[in-house]
Image 1 (spheres, each protein chain N blue to C red):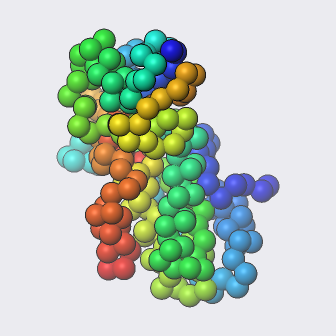
Image 2 (cartoon, rainbow over the protein chains, first blue to last red):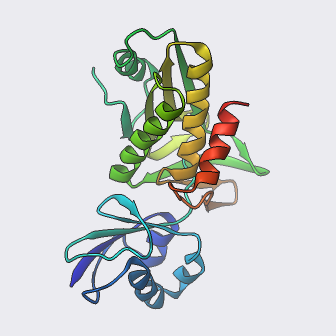
Length: 81
Length: 160
């Protein structure tokens, strides 16, 4: 199935895109999608323990499963304010 | 002009507009606290030229609303307005405006402080610092909205 992956800040720069379309296995979790992404962009790997994730613009745990067409986002540590 | 209480904004922030939006939401506010976060000219020994902010807008607006919900668990009659800039923000300009209204000053001050602490913890916003000699993405907290310890720390600071 196909999902949209949104990336921000340093992760966006590493990927060279703010948004990616990727095929993922039908039972994919956020953690699985992250591993797939980190394999494609090894410079992202060090972020594994510090990222947050969201599905359809709601925070989600890395164990959450995603569905066809979902918007997945991976967020590096935040620095607003 | 009417503005929403929670927003990501690409131009200059207006406390007046935010104040008007929030004052309406409290029946009898006895105190309204205004807070502006300003871009500093020096950070960690570096001379800052300007900041560039990026946000996951939809989630950021939800995070602001969540912060108000949390604040209202602590100070039942408090109301918040939170606007944050994206894009280039010059030194001396405001990057965030917070208006906190409550029946009494203690709750209004506390809710305002709680809001800025929680924004720094859980709002999906990033700051790209351009300084003399380079640029760097500032990476602060891992956003974990359910982390009770972080929330307790924000509450402690709010009540300090």
